[in-house]
Length: 219
Ligand code: MG
Ligand code: ZN
Image (cartoon, rainbow, N blue to C red; front, side):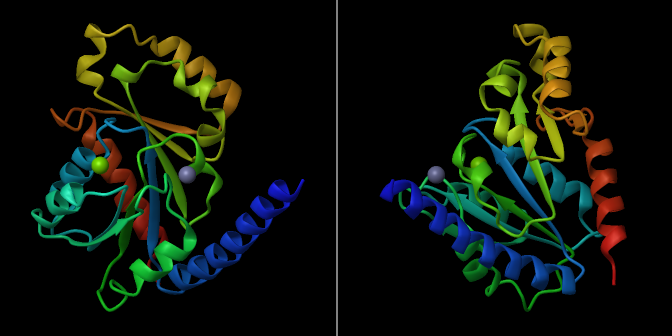
C-alpha cells in the first residue's frame, strides 16, 4: 500500500510540473512533440530527416533523452539544430522536471517546434506527461505488429503513430491489416504515417502535417 501511494504522489507532482510546462509552451505558440518508441525504431534517423526537410521553413529545437550516451544528441547537433541532452543515468523515461530544466537552455531561441526524443522504452514513458501537445509513437516494421496489443497504453495515449522502416515491410512478417485492426481496437482516433526515414518514402506527408500543426499554433 505504501508503495502504491508513493507512486501516485510522484505522478501527481509530475502532472503539476507538466501542466506548468504546457502553459509556458502554449504562451509561446510552440508545438511540442513527445517522440516515444522502443530502442532501435529509428527515432533519431527520423529526426535527422525531418530537420533536413523543414530547414528554412520551421525553427526547431530538440531535447534528447538517453540513458547514458550523447551519441544521438551529437547526430542532431551535426544537423545544425539546437539540442539539449538529458542523461537520465539509468532512469527509463523522461519526466516533466527534466523538461523544465532542459527548456531553460532553449527558451531564448526563436523555436516554433520542439521535439522531445524520449528514452527508448514503450512502457513507462507513457505514464509521464511532459507538457507536450502531441505524443507520437514510432514503431518499425521490424519490431512486429503485435506491439500495439502488448503495449496498449502508449498507443492509447498517442495522437499519432509513425510506422517506420516501411521499405523493409516485404522482408518482415509485419501484418499491416492486423496492425490497423489492433490500432482500431486500442485507439480508433489515432493518425498513422507510413514512412521510411532511411529512404525518405512517405516522409513528405509527415513533414507537411508538422508544418500544418505549427501553423495552427502561431500567435
Ligand atoms: Mg535515438
Ligand atoms: Zn521509466
